[in-house]
Structure formats: structure tokens, C-alpha cells
Length: 211
Image (cartoon, rainbow, N blue to C red; front, side, top):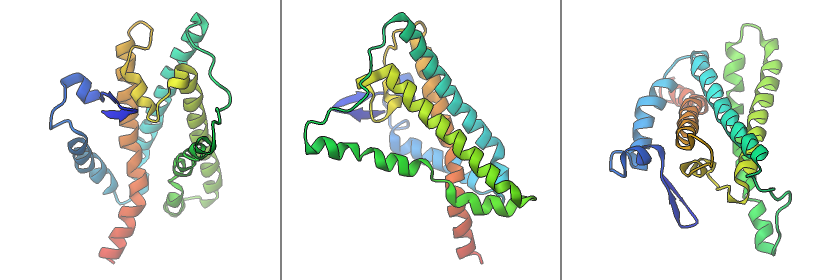
């Protein structure tokens, strides 16, 4: 789970089984590192992660499609409030809060250092530019669609961790089912995409420790 503005939002495991030591944040992160991240980053070639990477993209699309579908349904039903198009600036502190979006944007494209590994594994190196362009377009499309439909759905109630918004009734039939699908799909997406992020680190450590 996570907490925001003094309110605790239950995570997937906590919502299903209650709060226990085995499903605490630290234990879950440790288990994910040992049984998901470590095996996946141990491959010799980055190309070995192509299937898990494709699955992670598909899971991100699932998140976008469900969020967009719910937002559009509620929009047609008239149960979605008109979101604010511009922030309210109450003073200097409000302006500084705008800069909290900068770290998110900076870390959104954190796989650029894998370009060298991808380039080295390509049989035709002229493909690197189309690959980079396609990746940037795909990532940008998912990010923009996620932010747009999530803000349209939750409006001013959008939390820093938007997944925390999916622990409540969405005001549609089978709300709890969609809540779980969204959170499980995005959790699996994150688990499968981070091995790509860690691959270059593992490769460099391997080269330093075992030259």
C-alpha cells in the first residue's frame, strides 16, 4: 500500500489478504529483486529480454485502454467533472510545486544508455535510428494517454501515485474487478520493464569484476 495526504491506500496484496509481514513493502521488493529482476538481468544478451519487454508494453497498453474506457463511459454518463485546464497559483510555493513534474519527465526516458548494447547486437546497424524513433514515439504515446485519461477520470482527486486511485469504487459495474486488473497489469509491467533498466548496470559490473 501507499499513503497520500494522511490517507492509506491499500495495495493489491494488502487488499486481498490483509496487512501481514510477508506482503509488506520491504518483503515484496526483496522477493521481486531476487526472483524477477536478478534472473532477468543475468542474460548475456539484451535481445533475450525481447519477449518480456513486449509483454511489458502490452500490459501498459492494457492500463491505458481500461483507464480510457472507464473515463469515456463516465464522460458520456455525465459523471465526470470538467478538469481544470490550468493550475491555481496561490503564491511562490505553488510555482515551486510545478517543478515536481520535472523529475518525472527526466526519469521517464531512462533506458537511453542501452542504445549502445542494442547497437552492438544489431546485425544491421542502420536500424538503430528507426528503433529509437519508434521507442520514443511509443513511450510518449503511452505516457500522454495515461496522464490524459487518468486526469480526465479522477480530476483534482488524481494522486501522485495514480494506482492508489484504483483502490476505491470507480462508479461503474464490476469496479473492483477493473481496479484489480489495472493494478495487477501495471505492477507486472513495472516488474518486466525494470530488467531493461538494470541490464546495463549488470553488464558494466560484470565487466569491472570479471574483465
